[in-house]
Amino acid sequence: MKLSLISSVYSPSSSSFPIILRSSAFINLCKPFCSFSLPSSPSTPVNPKVPLFLRSPIYSTKLCDLKKWHDWAKGLALSIGSTFVHSDNGPDPSILCRELKWLMEDAVEDHSMFSKMGLENIDERVNMRVGVEELYDMWKERIEERRPFQYVVGCEHWRDLVLSVQEGVLIPRPETEVIVDFVSDAVSKNEDLRSGVWADLGTGSGALAIGVGRVLGIGGRVIATDLSPVAFAVAAYNVQRYCSQDKIEVREGSWFEPLKDMEGKLAGLVSNPPYIPSKEISGLQAEVGRHEPRVALDGGIDGMDALLHLCDGAALFLKPGGFFAFETNGEQQCRVLVDYMKNNRSGSLCNFKIVTDFAGIERFVIGFHR
Ligand SMILES: C[S@@+](CC[C@H](N)C(=O)[O-])C[C@H]1O[C@@H](n2cnc3c(N)ncnc32)[C@H](O)[C@@H]1O
Image (cartoon, rainbow, N blue to C red):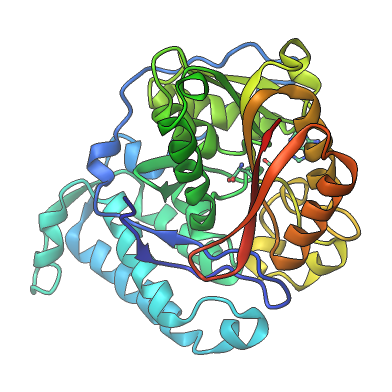
């Protein structure tokens, strides 16, 4: 089930890169359940940042100072007018004001204080997860530098998860959520797939790996890989927050390279790889192009580099009857991918299907190993 409120639109002006949504209703259900220690990594360890809503409320601010900040922040948001919309289809003031509300909710411990903010002489103090001076900096970064809201607060809502994100890790998109439904559908009809080993290649925040892990049965496992040390660390942190470390293993490395022990053994393979054509990166919305990692976006000249590599790997690494699902940039990439598989991998891969996203755009290619 999806619990989204529409938030910042990060879709680029020049491609159909998906839109970001946020839901905030269930934030308190998503507190961490496990303590965290990073699994051993071959590269320099990265310390994942704790999302704002999980930080301790160790700051205290006068309600009148919080109100002063809020009025200033709202004024800044309104002053943008349609500037961002016109420049790169960026957020308008209504979206920014909604984010401001969410920022307040993440920063302030007791939400009942909000109703007192309109009152005169509000000397009462509020417990906060961040100092009010830092709130000024956070909001300036959001508006003046177009830093994505999700990086400002350090999390994104995705399906029923609240995932930690930070610079260096792609913010998971709502479009990608449906891949978990494809897997859920496939495993509901096949016990062998339900209890098998799956891979999520280019896991980023670990969104797909955690989502897939939750629909597998007893014995079912997921191996999540990523080339980026930041993604590796953040995915491992998210896996641990959801106490899924028994089911999900995060490995650092390029595509199938960390999966050498799994040749011909995978029950399933999912991936949302980088697929934006290189020349389109400069036209992306500022939040995406300036702040999200290029390694998560750039799919080479036609955006197909990783997707074609993943097809070749699926033929080699899936076991007979194994399932795969790949996200693409849209109709053209779906068709190129299916043609490639028909012409080059039909000896091992079959039952290809192109599936649309919730906007009706042909977005996914799914299929099976023979
Ligand atoms: C579009 S992002 C998707 C992230 C995540 N799966 C999601 O849907 O939110 C692509 C991911 O692929 C990773 N990546 C890029 N090149 C890679 C490679 N050669 N091997 C493994 N991962 C790679 C990036 O670091 C990034 O995390």
